[in-house]
Structures are given as structure tokens and as C-alpha cells.
Image (cartoon, rainbow, N blue to C red; front, side, top):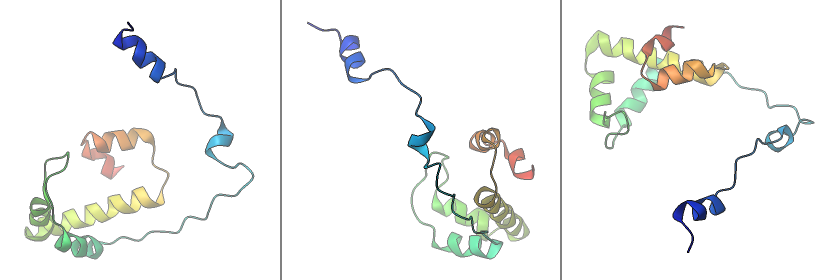
Amino acid sequence: KKRVLDILHDKHPSSTSPKAEALFNLNEEFPVLEDVNITANHVEAVAKKLHGGAGPGGTDARHWQDMLLYRGAASSRLREATASLVRRLANQAVEWSSIRALMACRLSFIST
């Protein structure tokens, strides 16, 4: 009779590093990136259509709507900051350390 650990080892072979050719066709050019220009108005329009339950961060659609739409100048600043973050993520090569900081809710990432 096999142990569970032996069965798992049989099902899951050791990892290997992929060859570069498997990830990209090195003979092709990368597509040209188009500049994405998200504004606070875009964020506002999307916020009005949000619905649904809380995700991993714990805030549901209603909470996001409250923060983005109903808090006057603070909401306006948050919409601008959100648009700025989206533009940065869409238009720049963002360092992995910055992505990790964002995912860990270290909001200083936004200002760098």
C-alpha cells in the first residue's frame, strides 16, 4: 500500500524552468502598446454600475460606491488616485516590488 505522500509525488513531478522559446516567439515583434487614458470620469461611471459582494479585500460594491461617489472632495481625490493607478498599471512596466507593495496595501506604491 502506497503512502499519500508517495502518491502525491507521483502525481506532481518536480518543477522545471521553462525555456524562453516556450514563453515568447523570439522572432516576432511585440505589439505596440496603446496609451490608456483613464480619467476620474471613467472611474465615476464604472463606480455607478458596481454591484456584488465583498472580495478578498472585504469591501463590497456598496462600500466602493460610497467611497467613490458620496464623500464630496474626498471621493473626487479617490477617483483621481484610482485613475492614476490604473493609468500607471496599464501604461508602464511596473516593477514586481511595486506590485507586491500594492497587493500588501502599502499605498505608498501609488505615489512612486
